[in-house]
Every structure is written in C-alpha cells, then in structure tokens.
Amino acid sequence: MSAATWLNKVKWDDQGLVPVIAQEVGSNDVLMFAWMNRDALSKTVEIGEAVYWSRSRKKLWHKGEESGHVQKVKEIRLDCDQDVVLIKVEQADGIACHTGRHSCFFQKFEGSLNEGDWQAVDPVLKDPESIYK
Image 1 (cartoon, rainbow, N blue to C red):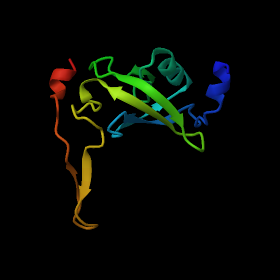
Image 2: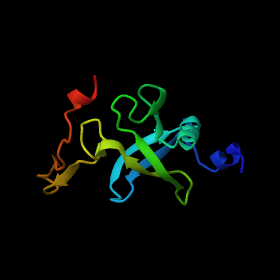
Image 3: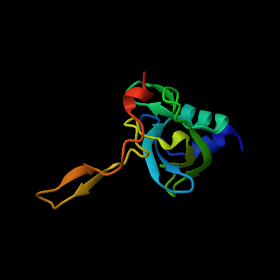
C-alpha cells in the first residue's frame, strides 16, 4: 500500500490535523493527547518515535526533543470513524507530561457539582525546571 493510500484513510480535520491519544504499552495508562498532521504521522511511522504537530509553535514536535522523554511507538491504531489515532508507546523515563508527571491526566475531579474541584493526584517524578533548560 502506498504512503498516500494509508494516509488518505485518515479523516483529517479542516486544519489537516487528527487527534492522537498516546497510551503506554503494558500499563495501558493514557499518557497524553496531541495532534498530528500528515507529515507528523508519516515521520512517526518512519522513525518509530512519536512526532506531533505543535499548534502553538506551528511546527513538527518530536516528543522528547528537549526533555529526552521520547515515545517509542509499538503500535498505531485508527478508530472506527477513522478520525482519531491511538499510538501505543514505551515512554522514556516514565514521564510524558511537561509538568514532570507520568501522564498529562493527573488532575482528578473530586467533590460535588457545586463544591467540586480538580485535584492533582499523581506525583511529580522530576522537577520540570531540571528537564527544560
């Protein structure tokens, strides 16, 4: 199957992006959510490490390029509607979040409708100040 064929199966949004969920192999923890464009998905397949599209920086972002916390891709899946990608990864140093935590989903809602709030429930594994220079 040519590159164009498999990439054309993905339903890209109006900006040419697809949402991506990164899930840790073994634990099945959801590590993070990001976006990919065609180039990012192609590069991810080519090098076997996660490459995303940074909407804020408007450029490709090789996960771990600054922190060293690369994501080795073990499997890539496309959902039934072909508009969400799931990548199963091995996370270097167990840190996926720029806050120094294992997962970006470290805030848990606790309480009731009127008196609830988000609580950080996962520890910082490494101080972000020491990760990013």
